Every structure is written in C-alpha cells, then in structure tokens.
Length: 250
Image 1 (cartoon, one colour):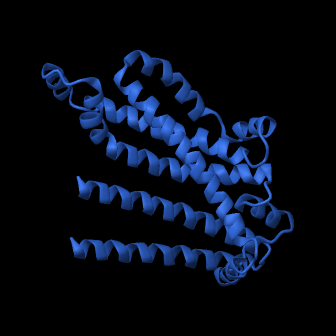
Image 2: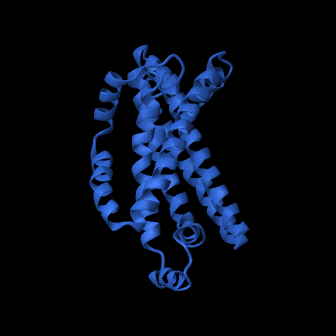
C-alpha cells in the first residue's frame, strides 16, 4: 500500500511538471508576455502579489464568502435532503426545484443577483445556489441507499423516527455528504470568483482578476488564477482529511 501511494505521488508530480512544460513551450511559441507569460515570470508576480498590503484582505474576503455560502447551503441541504430522502412526496416536490437551480446558467443567477443584492452579497448568494443542489442531491441518494430491511427492523422494535435518523440514516449518508461537499466546493469556488468578477466588491480575487484583465496584466491574471486553484485544492484536501478522520473514528 505504501509503495502504491509513493508511486501515485510520483505520477502526480510528473503530471504537474508536464503541465509546466506545456505552459513553458506555449509561452516560447507565442513569444509575447502579454499573451502568455512564462511560468517563472508568473511565479515572480505571485511573490509580488503576496507582499501587496491588500493581498490577505482579498484572499480572506473570497474565502469568507465561500465559507458563508457553503455553511448556509450545507444546513439547508442536510435538513431538506434528509426530509426528501424519507418522504417521497416531499422528494417529488423538491426535485424540480433542484433541477431548476442546477440547470440555470450561473451567469443568469449572477445578473439577477446584481439586481437583488449589494456587491458583497452577490458571491455569497451564488455560492449558496451552486453548492446547495450538489450536497442536497447526494444526501437524498444516501438516504434512499439505506437498507430498507434495517428500517423495517427498527420499526418492529418500535424505535422512534428521531433515533432512526440519528443512528441509521445519518451514519449511512456520511460518505455521500463528503462526496457532495467536495463536488460543491470545486464548482462553488469557480462560481464565487465569477460573481466577484461581475459584482466587483472592494476586496476579492475576482475583483483583482478583472482589474488585471482590464490593464492587460496577463501575468497577474494567471497568478490569481493559480491562487484560486490552490485554494480550491486545499479545501478539497481538507474535506478528504475530515472524511478520513471521521471514518477512522467510526
């Protein structure tokens, strides 16, 4: 198992190096820093960004908006998802709403949010609407995946619904919760930054990306993009770590 982990890690490093080589080759091919700056110049720009006084305010604001949106969507998805998984009528009622939210273009949601909310609330609203369907759908699937014989046995022994949910449903849906949260985070961060690009709050990664694009600072635009990818990746690692720890605890 340890050898397999080491081998997989090696392949991951090789993949990253391959992407960097493609990036370098592309920059040499176009021969223009305005179109595609080389990786080393982007790295220097990234270091300069970190020393900027507003760097941590921008990063922190984006992360805070993402966390607020995630927490609200998680609470809603958990409560509504469990109810929809147990009650078929409520599931039939909720399903068209989930499909509608999931199918609506993100840009449409953002444009509507720009009318309804102030610039700082727009990314949070977008985070909520993009993350909620992923988590809720996974929870519903997890509830429906529970062994029906186990539920029937609980009713035979006259275990009340509260304890059935607590001791049967919730432990069963934990893997589904983590899977849904991981997918929601991956898609949600992109939507949040798009929301910031269009709403232009004072602090935010999307705001600085838009500013970089306006002044043709391609190296800055790519540097902020790399930072956004790293933030998304770190939160996905955090979710996987919590999942691993919870499974180990069980």
